[in-house]
Amino acid sequence: MPAIYEHKGHFINETPSQISRDAQLLARAALKEYEEIGPDALTIGVDVYNLEAEAAGCEVTYYEGDDTSIPGIKPGNHVIKLGQDLSNHPVPNPLKDGRMPVNIEAARIVRKEIGDDYWIRGAISGPFSLAISLLGAEDLFISCLDDPEFVDGLMAYSSKIIKEFAKGYIDVGAELIIFDSQASPELLSPAMYEEIVLPVMQDLITHFKSQGVNDVPLIIGGNTTPIIDTLIETGANNLLCDFTGDWDEWSAATGSAKRAIRRNIAPRLIETGSLDEIYAVAKQDIDNAKGYPGFIMGTAVIPYGTKTENILAIKQACLDAGA
Amino acid sequence: MPDYAQLNQFLYEGKSKDVQRLTQEYIDEGLPVDEILNEGLIAGMSVVGEDFKYNILYVPEVLIAARAMKAGLAIIKPLLTARADDTSSSGTVVMGTVKGDLHDIGKNLVCMMAEGAGFTIIDIGVDQPYENFIATAQEHNADIVGMSALLTTTMPYMKKVVDEFDNAGLSDTKIAVGGAPVSEMYADEVGADGYGADAPSSVELFHKLCASA
Image (cartoon, rainbow over all chains, first blue to last red; front, side):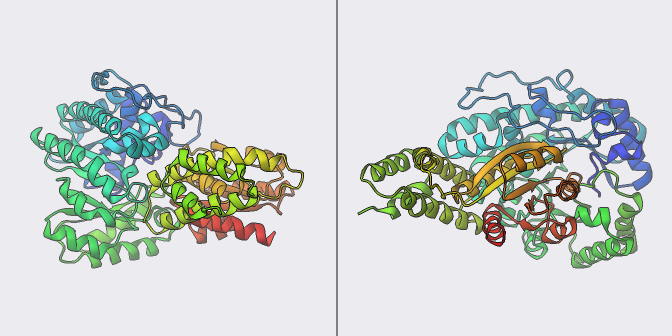
């Protein structure tokens, strides 16, 4: 299951900025990914951390011409102010605001083309990452200590936005995938994750299940080994052990909790390694996971322009192992 | 008798007002400004850096400590720069995130920790082309240029910056790189002078690079 977001554009010779703003192009790129790679799931999304924040008013920087940089929110282009009361703050409409309609329409097109018996996942931000996009990283991190009540309000507001966006995807027949890498223990302490993020994430996943979405991958990049138990408590049935995570600790903890784990291969290897090197690392990861019932071979985010055969080398390792 | 351990502790706990108050008290008592800076503020920040490196502290705690450090520095800096023989700076570092990359959490942490260790930091921001790195390094006669990238797609630009420094005849300027996808091996590959795995390691690297210059 490769993580292909900005690289989608490469399949149809378009840039990330171009496909991220056009539902037809995004759908065409996703369908080409399906045709060329044949992954077990497709994710609809390019700059996956920006959609909700942009719909709420943050300005996203796009790149024109043949510049393949990934759209992003520049520091300072945030819409929420420190201490702001957000209890009645307007929540974006997923059918009207920002590029939410672009992604939802792309998901609808892809679902229609591929049919119902396949995972098509709409990318949504996790609440902490969205809170960073809305407020700015430093202000949020400092507020976690200075003004926890405000942070709770901001997390609740983020959660409302995410639920609305998710509803848009669910209504067109897509499943979901949550990205919350800015809540990584490389930035936020395990104790703070438990106190600030966990309750909101539990509520979101319970909500999605009540909407009929039972498979909800939760993606937090980096080494999340210190928060495995808390991630299990979120209720997500599908978790990420990134290439820097400790597989042995992960598989021991998540196996008893009956969670699927996606194990990622490092992006730089996939981008620059030889086919033999890539295959060997994938095979090693698969061998390490022998006997683990919910193992998913994955990749970190595939860099734009990566050769298709490099991605297929990983798939071949899975097929040779009997997947 | 100054209680620098108390000042260290206030800084560690991010108590800006207490750091400000105690720094001012020590100045009013006539204690040497260099001593307050080194033993009170920089020493306190170096404990923060160590504890951050070993996951005892995390980003929020580091940020409030850096804020407290700034409160102390705001009192001390004007006194230092007013002196003709000011040698308090450990070196000048130009910091930026490379072109095409808008991420700045890591870069900002390095800036704060390096400033807390006595370096003069010129932060040129995110999405920076090589021309800005070169122009700023020349303008400030920088000892070190620090580059950050979070994306595998933007980190190759680091090589472009290194090459352009060489082309501009500035190969004496030390270049340090860092960011989630970057590694020691990658730093060697692009011809950088060093790699900082995290903010505290970057500060150690800056000290090393300045000493070797």
